[in-house]
Image (cartoon, rainbow, N blue to C red; front, top):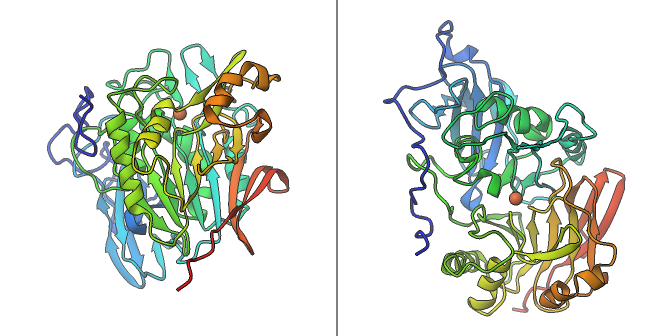
Length: 439
Ligand SMILES: [Fe+2]
């Protein structure tokens, strides 16, 4: 039986919390006053119903102050216990009240969610792959370009940053989620800092972030860092959960729906019968988040319908998710959903389906080494897959380039662009906004 969705499914992971109510970072540095707390990183993550959570990461044992519309208070530790493998830092948070006009930590302004979002930067699969014998050169911004991509994306002046998952890639030769590993590779703070926070640079503070968990952050891998640093939900328990509840965020006149597909048993190439009811329920929740007459886009890590290169063959991903969509409800996603934004495959891909399915906007090449090349003769070697997906080879636009996505308002909808740089556009497509029903 699949584990019950959204419950605290007890993975065979080490308990996250040890020690009793010891707050803060390890070390016994000098006690400093609240007004002098050094902040290594500050950022905002957006959660259910657009709640904006301010986070601050400090090497101090106390949390800094946050000022919201002139009122100053001390932030709270995200978890009131020491977190193994993250003892160098203390993560503090504060949920910013809806409608707040200005917020800052130690004098530095925080990015808040605008009522009407105009420009959304979308990135995915960003970490530097160091696992087993596979190693990117993390010191070379050509080989691992996440810092370059993030810097270019920041120049787009986004109102919102969407990360489609798989942030943590430095796992090492013998990864074990029950061990912290080494500062160069493992499941610990220095690795999260090197793989995500430091290279995110200006993008981290330019706009609020909304993130979906990738399989690299699942309960067998980098889940501790995910839940401690980036999960938008309140701290919930002492163990990892396989499935987080979907949620929606208003961008003004369109909604962004978030769904957690970090765990798809048996990979992506076959239907996992046990997982189908779980995803049936997930998609049903997504359907409940769709509002009458309002367009939406769905962001999740694993593609529902994408062509994936696999050496001299191709396959499609994900059979389980596609089957769950097919079997559930109307046999498709709600018609208001214009596109699914997905990652997982390290490339840029776009598919505009002829039938009722929303477009696939795959953006998974924002840093991690690129996937294997798509065979040149896709129509031949991928005939079966193309038939299963009901598309022609010409309808699959696939780019083997590092890059990011930009979704911006245009006169007749939302303009989606795939870019390798601010002035280098690989793809330009307008998501047509359905006209509102007449009164
Ligand atoms: Fe992935």
